[in-house]
Amino acid sequence: MRELWEFTKLIRSKNAGPFELTFDIMFKDADSFHQVMKSGALTPELIAHLYKTQRERTRFFVIERLLTVKISIPRAIFSGDVMDTDVYGGQFHGPLVRLPIDLG
Amino acid sequence: MSEKLKALAATGNLSTGFEEESLVRAVQQGAGFVGCDAGTTDSGPYYLGSGNPRGPREGTKRNLHIMIREALRAGIPVIVGSAGHAGGRPHLEWTIEIIKELARENGWHFKLAAIDSEITKEDLLDAFRRGEVTPLYPAPDLNEGTLRQAERFVAMMGIEPIQAALSSGAQVVVAGRCSDVAIYAAGKILECGAASAAQRLYPDCMAAELDQEGFTVEPPNPALRCTPQSVAAHTLYENADPYYLVESGGTLDTTAVQYEALSDRAVRVRGSRFVASEKYTVRIEGAALAGFRSIVVAGIRDPLLLRQLDKFLSSLRAVINRKIEKSLKISSNAYTLSFRVYGWNASLGPLEPISHVEGHEIGLIIDVVASSQSMAADILPLVWHTGLHHAIPEHEGLISNFAFPFSPPGIDVGPVYRFCANHVWELKDPCEPFRMNMENL
Image 1: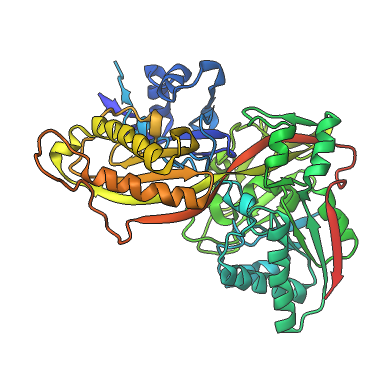
Image 2 (image 1 turned 60 degrees about the horizontal axis):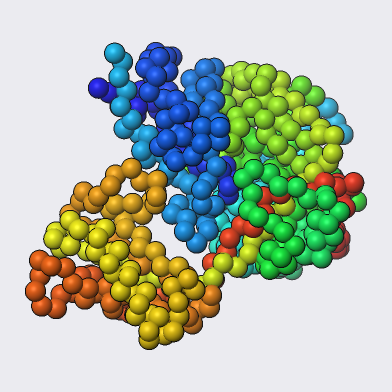
C-alpha cells in the first residue's frame, strides 16, 4: 500500500477567506495523477467524512490540465474565533498526507 | 490610457519587504505604477477588531520609503491597498502618518490621497434595513443586534475609488480595504508579489505588462523565474474556486485561460475574462469582541498521566467548574475553558482522527476566555493550580502534573475578536461608501 504524498509534489491547506478552507493537491506527473484518481481513494465523500462536513458542502475540482485536485469546504469554526485551532488553516491537510492509495 | 501598462507589485505584503535592487530595476524598466497590497484577513479578526495595524512600523516605513522615492523619481504613482493590514480607519491613519513622516524627513512634495473604507454602523444598519446587504455562504448571523455590538466594519472597494483618486492627480494613493484586482488589474497573480515565482527564495517584487488581450508576468529580480506551472498554481492559492474569482463589481472567469512560457522566466497569460455583475456589490468585513483571553503553557511527561490524559482532563474540567462556581461565584457558561493538547489534537481539534496521545510528552495550553480580562485573570490561577495537583490513581500522595516553563505560568493575552460578517453590499455607485481625502504634502 502506498500513500498519497508519494504521488504528489504539494499537499496544502489554507484559508480561502475566514469562513472556508481550501486544499490543493498537486501531482508529480500525469501517471501519478491518473493512478490516484483511478484508485478511487480520493473522493468528495472521503473529504466530507474526514472533515465532518456534508457531501453537498464539499466542492471538489479535478483540474487535469494542472494535474491538481482542489477541494474547498466550509469552516465549522471561523478563523480566529474563540475555539479555532489554526488561524491560517495551514495544517488541516495533515490527515490527507498519508492517505492509503491502493493501486489494486 | 496607453495600449500597454506595466504593473509592479512591490511585494506580497507591505510589512514584509523586497529587494531594493529589484524595485529600482523594475521602475527603470518602465513600470507604470508601483502597487502594494498591505492586508489580508488571513491573520484572523484581531487587527480589524482592535484597530491595531500589523507592523512592523519600521519595516513598513523602509518599504514605503523606497517605493515612493523611486516612483517620484520616475513620475509614476504609488498605490497601497488594504492599509495597515485590516484597512479600517485607524489602519489608514497609521499608514498616512508614516508617509507624512517620510515626506517631512526627505523633503518630498506630492499629492496624497487617502481613501477611507470604514463603514459606520449607522450607515450599514440603513443599508441592512433597505435590504442591500446579503449573506454569502457560510456567514455568521448578522442582524441588527449583532451589527450594533460589532467593533468595526469595512467595505472592500473595487477599482473605481482608486481610479478617481488617480484622475484627481494623486501621486500616492493609500486605500483602506480593497480587493487585489483594484490595485493591479492582473490581481491574483501579482497580489502576493514574488509568490507566483517557481521558487520564492525571499519576499520580492513581481511585474506584469498588461495589454488588451492579457498580460506577461516576469520577476524583476534575475534570480527568480516564473513558469506556466508556477503562475497557474498561484491562481489556486487561497481561492475556494479555481475557475471563478468573485471580485468587487464582477467575477474573473479563468476557465479558458492559457499560460505560455515566453522565456525561462516570463509567462504570457491570456484568455481570462472579467464578467461584470448585474448589480455592483462590495464585500463587507466586520469584527466583534468575543471576550478576553488568559493562557497557561505547560508540559506533561509522566507516562501514567499521558495514557489517561483524556479522562484526566475531563475530570479536571468538572473539578475546576465546581471550584470556580464556589469560590468566584462564576458559572461555567460565563467563560470558555479549552485544553489545547499539542502532541495530540491541538492543531485539528475535533477533526483530529487520531484518538489518543502517541508520543512521550505533550505540550498543553490551558485557554480561558471570559467577558473581561480581570475575570479571565481571576479564573486562570484556579485552573492551573487545580490541574497541577489533580490526582491520578497510580500515584499516592501529592503530585505536580505540569512542567511550567515560565514564572508566572500564566499570561493575559488581551481581547479576542471574531469575524461577524461575510456579506455583500449592493451599491448604486461603486464610490459611494468610500471617502477620499486629498492633501498636498
